[in-house]
Length: 391
Image (cartoon, rainbow, N blue to C red):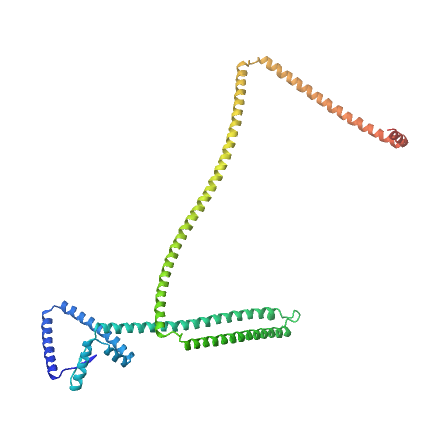
């Protein structure tokens, strides 16, 4: 915002003050070091950047806002600002050709402009997000439709290859039967017509529902139940609050999921350890049972060995007693016993030969008797029959 100057005297005084300020700045720069000059230059650049940003925001605000709104803002301004504007208007009417002097915006006005621009930017972002979501929904629907169409085409291709290319061939000629091809396409056309009729009925139902909703909306507008802009803003604020709460709950849910994931990992680790320990316990139980069985077996064998040891000790004691009581015979007695043994062996062999000869004679006489018996049966069969009858 600008206002006109106060005439030539104000112009002259401002030029004198500007000259004096330039001289004082020159003296100050002459006394300052390079670091101080660089620091002051950086501060001036930062201030210039800040002013450029404020100017850009104000320019954008002035392009967007209606001049009537600016007049209402001036009317709603503080009394001091209204006096300044009034003086500015009076002096601008009385004095022509005066220079313009800048009027700085107050902090409240800057905050108001920044807040409005912030709200406007947020609305643009929300609008862009809404439009982007619509575009994404459209693309998703198009992709889903394309996937459905692709699946239908794959299914149709598979059925055509199964029913026509492979199933409709004549085994003798190797050609496709035309009647089956015609019947296949007629069935397809019939199913398409049924689908079209189904979609037409669904479309008509949706149109009826749309008309009902439009009629209800019109009735609400006539009854004054339609939401106004203030209601929408309130709903938007509540929606933002609920979204923030939802984000907080989502963060808490993510933390809980993370903690539950860690807990599950720890639980799985302990489960693995428990399984390993259970397997080790079962193995140890089996080994203990086997060791116990082996121990009982060893105990039984020990008892048997102990009994055998006692028997062996008894036998050993008897043998020791016999050894103590044993008297070695004379050599002549040993030679006489050996000679008697030789004679007895010789006599036994002689008797064995005699027994063999007697057995051979017995077998010979048995054969002769059997032959005689058979001869007597053939010569006098009646006598044998009478003998059998008598028996």
